[in-house]
Length: 495
Length: 73
Image (tube, rainbow over all chains, first blue to last red; front, side, top):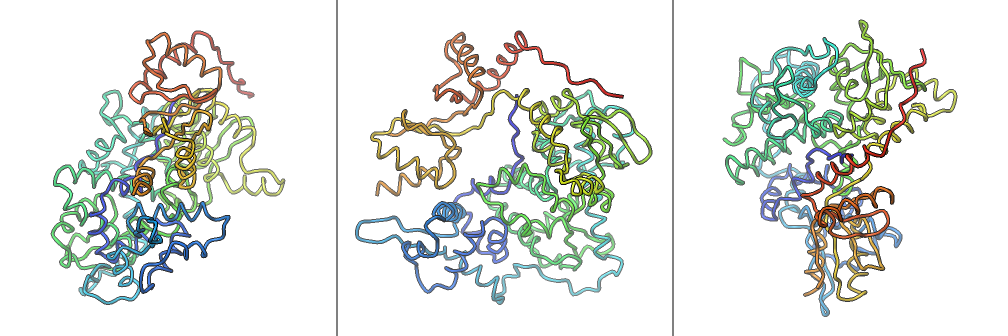
């Protein structure tokens, strides 16, 4: 009976920014490059590459030759993403003038600089010229980042009223109070008195926990940016956001110069240390080291994440991303997986990680705990509780699939079965259906069209850009989950 | 002139939809903006939570879920 809201994603945040902000953001080559890497679908990248060194604007009709007729939908989607990110400009269509498109000036210049090098923008960080402590190697940074990030996850997990003791015995300390405040502001946890930590997890918090690490980091960073927005105003946040994009382009294991940063950026360092995105040696604060959490922020693994697929990417538990970062304490075990699930809904997990046990306890009824192993089962009640928290059946299934023991995968492959027993997968879905009688989504209903043509025109455009959810030709109404692109389309058409 | 109305699209089984319509009519049509088709309703965003509660109450009166299979030790 609940809608699972994906946690806050980068595309949602960018959607809200005005065009002027984008122009300022694109002054930094690293930002233009990061947007190119992370936010654009493949076809949009092809367009950008084609337009980057074009001497002048290109005719829309020429662009159409690049795409096969059956790819019209992908083309329109790519163009609409490019437009919403202010990467391209398209002139409005007129009677005497054909439509033209070109890259926006700042984006084009910065993108060229990013590819060719040169300039004195220092947009990709200034390596430190000081000697580097040999103890700070990649393994050290990985451990450090994992520790920091797990502290945060532990804090969120520990706010669950855990059944049985031990599971909540986290690694002490927990995150800094600034991070705790952020989790509160971001509504991932809320103040409650019935739990040990004094706070309770929210629906958004559960969705957050089951996400892949990369999406988790972004969720937290965006909360942080918004909090800064409210405190200081917009001017700072452009620099903050471009600093994050810059961090993503730095090289893991190298030292960078703290003094070369602007004041805004230097002020960000303590918070980034708290998140585990950067490491600053205690003895020498003139250097900072980006960790894997930072350098994978815009990694190509999630580059396919477009505005339209943002939702599925947010809810998907991508095993590739999770294992590349290894947020579970025992990276080797997590990569192999440790969970068995049988056709009788019994569940065995070879793990002693409090984090993983707590996550399992979110949707399974755990019964016994041994050194290095827990057992339990999935029940109607446990799934119902999970769905009440806002976890979806698909999240549970994909969590089980990506964490299943390799023995299970091997046996399944040998017998030609899917990895998870189909009965269990179906039953989890059925339990969800039973509990979730209505599927809901917020959006806009378009109605009262003047003519059938108007209706057909706008509804088919909505379909092409991928915002159409429901339509009725008889009633001349349709429902779309976003309206900005449709509004722009109507405006352009009127001219 | 075309209008865009803000709200929530609800997708459900026809049986559930008819209960929702009934709840709406018992409450001075406070919930539903537009009855779209057999399986879709368009409802006010602010009232969604209350509507869900009312549906849950209504279902509790009529619906007894079967207990899941017992543990086979």
